Length: 139
Image (cartoon, rainbow, N blue to C red; front, side, top):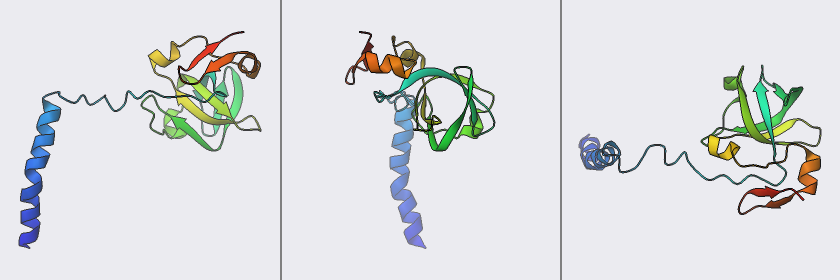
C-alpha cells in the first residue's frame, strides 16, 4: 500500500509545476488548437448546413454525408455530425465518387478569408494550386 502513496508524492510536484506554468500563462491553452491545416487540392469551398445525420445542405442543395465521413472542427479535432444539427458553416470539403460529402473542414475566420478558393470542380481543374502556400490562382 505504501507504493501507491509514494507514487502520488512523486507525481504531485510535476503536476503542480505543470499547473503553475498554465496558470502563469506561459503556454496558452489555445496554442494547440491553432494549427496550420493543409487542405488537399481537390477540396472545394462551400457552405454546409447540417441536418439529422446523414442529411446536409451543401450550397443550397440537399446532400448526404458518406459512410465514414470525417468532419474536422476549427481546432482540427473530429466532430460528430449529430452535434452539428441545425448549424451552418463555411467549409472546405471533398466528396466521394458518388457525390456524397466525404471530408469536411469547418473553417476558422482566417482560413475562410483565403481567397480565391474554388467552389466548383470546373474551377479547380482550370486554376493553379500551390500546395505549400495553400493558394489558388485563377488562370
